[in-house]
Length: 599
Ligand code: ADP
Ligand code: MG
Image (cartoon, rainbow, N blue to C red; front, top):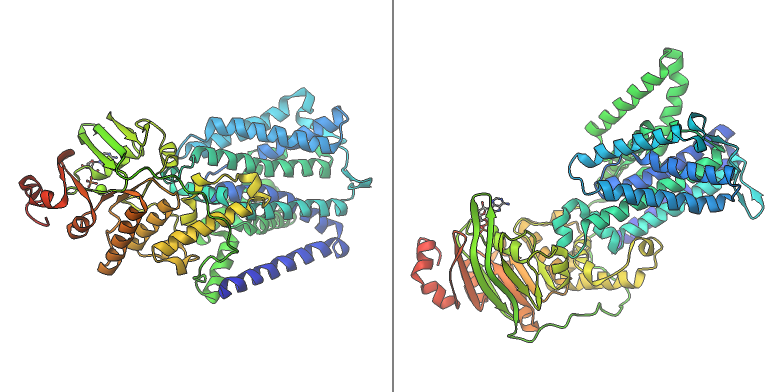
């Protein structure tokens, strides 16, 4: 804990120093520096949205300047042609930006791979073109005479006054983003890179998470656009074209996509460099504009080669080397009421029933007409040689994969064809044969992600820090599950630093954080040492005592025979036999399937 406290204290000292310097600048700096810093602040706001969207969420946008433009034009139009107050302009600008982002996001965010970045270029181009061709927006000449902002009778026409407003907004946006990342929706955003299946397994909808994140990033850009319009008092199409979008992305990348401060550092780096180049290049050539583009492209390539994490990434690697690994410790907070628990079904009642499940992959029938049942409070093992179709069966009954034919009943619901996240919300939690953890998130955060479906806070609540009671409940629950699997003292370590076997156990803690009725475990003991396996066996037996139902695939026959109440054996996609361990062990067909090796 001391390590982390120290780290926090150091960070606070840094932030205080930066704030103090920024507060003093207008008193000592010339007007050129002040306007440059104003531009940096506005750029940083847009880049901050991109750090969240691209750096944390993994969705690249080459069209962010379009959102700046929509907001700038919205407030410009409303205040100049309709004579409204800039504050109404702010609401209008944010509303229009948010709605545009919602519409564009709904059209494009389902696109996979390279299609999303490509489509962002398309709308970036078309929106800038729109500004240049609408009469009401002044076509290519734009709109001028935009009023300056006034706060309580005090005019912000002077760039030095505007400076304070811009940097207060930047500060608040940083604070909002910081709060967001350490919250329920923030963990879901950080989970996006782990894929839709990971999020669905904890009951979250990756598409919705990405869409709200996209709108949030656009609103940051919108805020920047509003400030821009009332600072420059004039708007025209060119500052909002695709070239500007690329510059914003460059800011985020140059600063470091991985962390919020990267947005500030990157905006400063790019704009200072741009200013420098605009001073120097005309002395060297008459084609300064083109050379500037070349210089930026070179910078981009150098960064991608030598400093993927941007400037902040370099700095961080350096400080971390000096400070050592993050402190391993428990989560400690004032005790809050635990999250409410689900009512578990009466022992012995049917929890899961699979009937005639079939899964075809092209010509291959991976699961062929398999039926079995699982009752409350049982541990049922699913065994069979490699390639028998066990993992596929698990994917079918958790609705991770659609079935080709058959039915699955979970509690009183027919779940075949239901979205996976909905099934997860009903109380079916799973782990994966190929571990799906977020290696750069702490153990605690990975497990806390499991409690997603039991909690409610959204982006706004989290950003404004109104989610703190629930957040404490989530973390307390995550710590409790970590304690259960014996990793309680390593809560703040990164999940990626664990050996693979231990990562599987961490997945169990994440599944338990969902307070499941049925726990579905795919080879949880693979890669564990004997003592660790024994501890796992004890944990699973204890869960059974508590009334949790468990379905498990496991290759270690010794382990599985001692643990389970019943076994279902699969071979070549079909069910071979089903029964209590001793009967299965004695069955000739099972011995033949395993060639008499391990059973
Ligand atoms: P097990 O978990 O019992 O080792 P799996 O369920 O992983 O077996 O695989 C069963 C069969 O289905 C294997 O032949 C495997 O190659 C095939 N298979 C599994 N997933 C896919 C997929 N997504 N596409 C095509 N074939 C698959
Ligand atoms: Mg498998």
